[in-house]
Image (cartoon, rainbow, N blue to C red; front, side):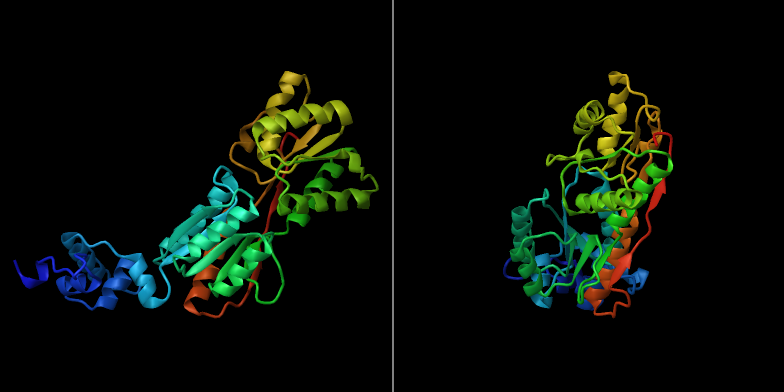
Length: 341
């Protein structure tokens, strides 16, 4: 066995990056870049480094790397839920973009709880992340202070702001809510209900768009707003649909999210209600399955994958110190008219 293929170890018994460099006959920096997946490294050298690392049984130590460089190869990502396809789509786009550039994601699920978000952020900052992606702008003052004091590059997703020093990628929830309401008005509806759950900032921004459209048309009625604090779900949508139709007798209902609207469409036949003849139904986010329902669901198609990709790209620029030409990126959404409204 040659010196290069022995398993030399430091006093702790752990193999080091320098050990792999000697075995692969390359520099330690080449090993580091190759194992991070940076595309600037010659593929031949990448293969040599990976073969040496596998032969020696080398596993990178992210904590040691963070201490040596004052940053890690990890990016902390805070999202409200993993049970909502909206955030799964966004997260997959973020991870795909970051991984291709040598970064890994540390995922934190806040459950829309400001205290949980603050605790998750404190824990993740202990790992010295290279960057941070957070959802929206609604959070505690303590969390805002943590982000600012950390000096970690940060990108906000799903909402936009033109405030100085803020980097964000999203779309206008208010404009999209207004456009969907105008679609229902154009179809002849005048008594349009707004059915919402969870009641996070983005849901309430859609409500503002709903109000703006109806006020402009001269038919806004606050009694047609039905707001529930519980998490959005099929079951809640079915429950709300039955109550709203019985109590308010609307022409149409704008559900703040597709899962509520999907629940309503599933409940309609059991209740003897014809959609859209008796009442039109619309959702938001155009989640999977909405186009397959009977009737198919009218919704707003939101650019969550594009948001994830653009946010990760912007964060890569910030982490590398590259100038960001556009600190606020607003992406397009689309009202998708189908059979339900």
